[in-house]
Structures are given as structure tokens and as C-alpha cells.
Image (tube, rainbow, N blue to C red; front, top):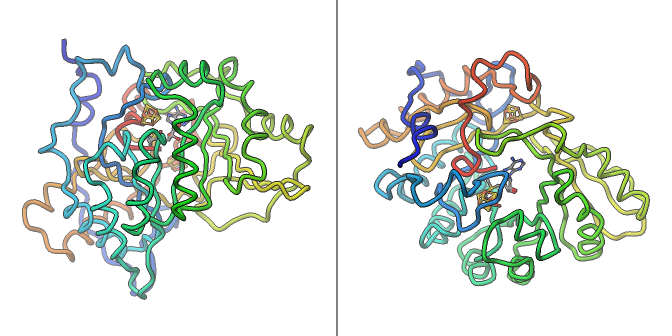
Length: 366
Ligand code: SAM
Ligand code: SF4
Ligand code: SF4
């Protein structure tokens, strides 16, 4: 039987927002809380070759699940055109994600189109990609040649059995580590390694991961397990607060904070006192950072989402395919961003209109 829960969300549409005024030259678009539009995350596919239990549990994402047909996806040219319009509104950073972005055929061709874009004052964009690493060893060089700046690789465990339990895939931690090495060799550095921590599952891997990535030149980042989507059965008891991660690592390897970063940076940075490098803590649950959230998200079929926890997005594919000019697209996006007030993580558990209708992480990317 075809599953319809999530498809119903995807088909829904938000009411049209009146086109907005473009920001003054050189200024970013601002939302209702004066947050600038700076980052665009582009999900290029809703498919994945892993079935991480917290993201695409196999019971839901099985052979009867309806993934998007290729015809529904934005083409690379359409993505690049939209990205170029977004740069006029303040976007300086692009991240390709998914699903698994390296499953999208010839994704390096998209990377080269995006790498050619410039900010209004002529600067290249920061162009990155988040991947599960399984195909990275064979793709890293082509991605670098195409103009990718850096890469983030997800890795939740070094222990092979634990990795298997969490990713529910046929791959091993060594496959992912080969991808990390290949990325660093290709110059996609520093490589960030993201670990989602779940209490009672992989929290015993915090120290082995810290030991493995100290002095490696890569930056290990610990992510609090989030209540994204409707399929992972999230439970607060499984969240390991970043403060606890920090305390556990600090007992073995003393750390000090790195000075706070610019608005829009979500990771709190700490460095080892002995010069072993840095770690990052992403505390989406215990320390909401909505006040500095400068991210827009574009889904594979061209819907614009204003929050990772949104119920629905604004269709940009229709005006794009109906022949809207760049100025018209920019005005539509400016109007949508101007009306943005999202702050889900600040409200978590309170005032949610319908918490059962959130989009899935594998559709919109992290
Ligand atoms: N497939 C790619 C990957 O795994 O890196 C890109 C997409 S994945 C959705 C992006 C990131 O979201 C990954 O680092 C993943 O670990 C993270 N993620 C997925 N579900 C999550 C959850 N419930 N809580 C926290 N992070 C999550
Ligand atoms: Fe796939 Fe990434 Fe989700 Fe894991 S986290 S199932 S690798 S999209
Ligand atoms: Fe941004 Fe939404 Fe996350 Fe808050 S909950 S930081 S608004 S994506």
C-alpha cells in the first residue's frame, strides 16, 4: 500500500504571499524578526542509500514508499537560476543536501553551475555539501574540480555494529572514513564530521569519536537529536545535551571556548588546550538558536521552507516554469521572507498548531 502521510504534506500549498519590495542594493532581505537571508540549503533528492533510524526508518521508507518522480525535481538549471536570484536577496552560502545528494546523477554539474555564481559585490559563494560519505571517496575529486568549497560528512559511530544499527545500510564506518580522507586530500577541507547523539544508543561513541578526530585536521561536531519529521518516534529522554557531551570530553581532554561566531553560525566551537583541534556543539534542542537563524530551505521540487520544522513550503517551481522573470522571482521570495516569523525550537512542545505535520529531514535536508 502506498504511504500517504507525507505525500499529503508535500501536495499541500501555502496561501500566496504578496510579492515584497527588494532590499536596498547591498542589503539582505530581512524577516519579521530582522533576521537576514544569508544561507540557502538546497535538497536535491528525497532518496537515500541509508535508512538511518532517526531519519528514514525502514518501516516507513520501504519499497512501497512513493519517492518523487524525476520529472517533479527541479533541474540543475532551475536550481542555479533560483540560487542566483537568492544571491540578490543576501544569500552568500549554499549547502547541497538531501536525502543523499551524491545519489543525484552528475551532481558535480550542478556544483559547477553554482560555483559560477557571485554575490552582488562580486564575491564567490561559500558552496558546501552534506553527505553520508558512502559515495564520497569516488566523488570527492570531481566535486572539488567543479568548485565545491568544503564538505560535511555524517558519521554516528566508529563501531561497525553500532554504525550498522544506526544507518541500517550495507556500508561500514571505514567506507565513510575513506570518503573523509578523500575529501581532505582533494582539498575540501577542513572536513566537518557530524555525529547525531542518541542516549542509550551511540552515546558510548562520543569519546572514541573525539579520540579518533583529534589532531586529524577534521572538525567533529555533536548534534543533539531533534524531533524533526513524524517518523522517528523522537523522545526527549534520548537527547544528550551538548553540556553533557562537553563535560564527558573535557574530563579526558581539557577544552576552551572559541570566541563566538557571526550570526547564522549554529555550532558552538571549543578547542583542545593541547592543540588537538576543535569540536563543535549543535544544541538545537537545549539552546535554541532561532534568533540568529538566517536559513532558507529549498526542497527537491522547488518549495521554499522557512524552518526545518515547517508544515509546508511556498511553491517556487510554478512561477519559475510559468516564465517569471528574475525580478519577479526575487519579489516573490522577498515577500515570503519578509513574512517569516518562524521560531519552532524556541517554542518546542508549546503552541504547536499541529506537530504531527512536520516535514521529514530526508526531504528537506539538515
Ligand atoms: N544524507 C546526508 C547526510 O546524512 O549527511 C544529508 C542529509 S541528512 C538529512 C543531514 C543531516 O541531518 C545529517 O547529518 C543527519 O545526521 C542529520 N539528521 C537527520 N535526522 C536528524 C535528527 N532527527 N536529529 C538531528 N540530526 C538529524
Ligand atoms: Fe539518509 Fe542522511 Fe537521512 Fe541518514 S540522515 S537516512 S544518510 S538522508
Ligand atoms: Fe531556524 Fe526553525 Fe531551527 Fe529555529 S527551529 S533555528 S527558525 S530552522
